[in-house]
Length: 252
Ligand SMILES: Nc1ncnc2c1ncn2[C@@H]1O[C@H](COP(=O)(O)OP(=O)(O)OP(=O)(O)O)[C@@H](O)[C@H]1O
Ligand SMILES: [Mg+2]
Image (cartoon, rainbow, N blue to C red; front, side):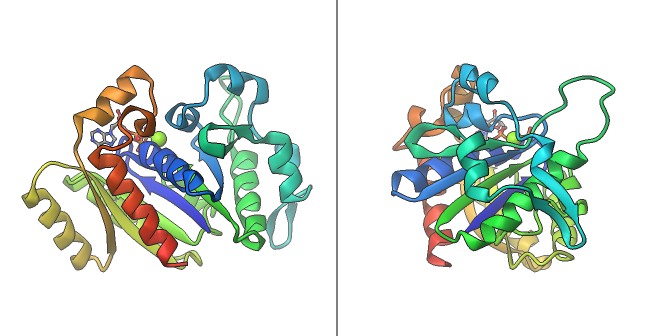
């Protein structure tokens, strides 16, 4: 299964993606985490040391070529993962889409095309759970980077602009062959906030799949540079994300 997380800046995409990936890897699944953000943070959220990252770097543009039906990998997907994935805690393997190395360098078309082709080839690997952490911009949808995912999780905070963002993302995603979209509301502080989001989802015909409450432990873990799963393995945030993982698993 291939899952991508999208939403407004700071909504909690990376925190949830990293925790989901590790929770599933702990259950024994083969998990590939893909940092699709050109300002990458997923390694830190997973608990991969910065030193390891420098050694491995990002996916090179030479891995993809343009074909009539869209971008395609130039090597088998297993080889790509073996060559470029960075090993992380609990057996999660991480791939980095890449980030600009220099100012004035130009666009990231090739980097997006590589992720798109990777996800396309992973369609034939249902045994691998792929979790793609996207950047806040809608570019991964306008470029079709996430066209090959099974589920697009729309992560939102319970305030108007964050919800408006997922509504726009959902409209774009509806133009791609993505079979399922579902809303994860994060940083919920009260029952009234939770109800307002449910009402928003009903009004816009969006499936609401999970609710993660505001939790100071998440902020403290981030401040300390410790993955949420290590800082608070038995806390309510990990419990809510584990429940989300179970629901996604049950649907396959
Ligand atoms: N449930 C929560 N309760 C409190 N703080 C949270 C919660 N979830 C995430 N945060 C905090 O919100 C901040 C943003 O989280 P995160 O980096 O996961 O968001 P993001 O959507 O990936 O952001 P970006 O768009 O910049 O990539 C972090 O400081 C994180 O610790
Ligand atoms: Mg992020």
